[in-house]
Image 1: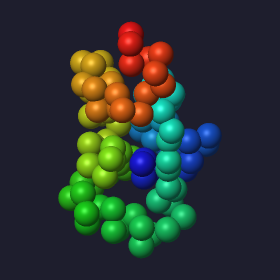
Image 2 (image 1 turned 90 degrees about the horizontal axis):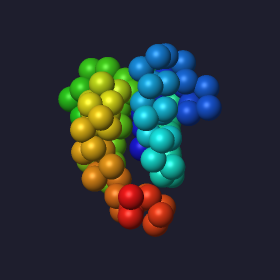
Image 3 (image 1 turned 90 degrees about the vertical axis):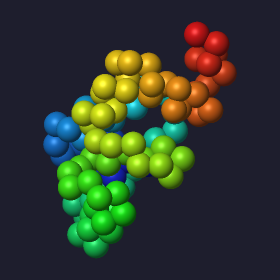
Image 4 (image 1 turned 180 degrees about the vertical axis):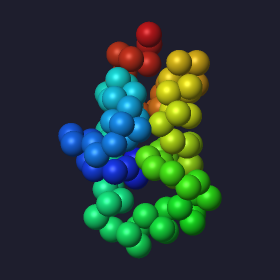
Amino acid sequence: MIYMKGIPDAPMCGFSSLAVKVLKTYKVPLSARNILENPELKNAVKGFSHWPTFPQIFINGEFIGGSDIILIMHQSGELKDKLIHLLPKVDKEE
């Protein structure tokens, strides 16, 4: 789940756009919520994660971080390890 400004097809900030681009490289199902449409949701997510900025990415209910963290994890290979159970079978064997 990605809590972001905008939606995956129309991100409303560069950080949200970056996070979507990184996650889409894995071809995993992507669920997103636009925090700009719901201030209560925005505040609830901030309170839960204790993270002040958006986007915020959760994998299997675990808060991972923002676009900077996702990018670093992608570059190191750690993100693929987090997503391995969601990857199409052909990608798991690479």
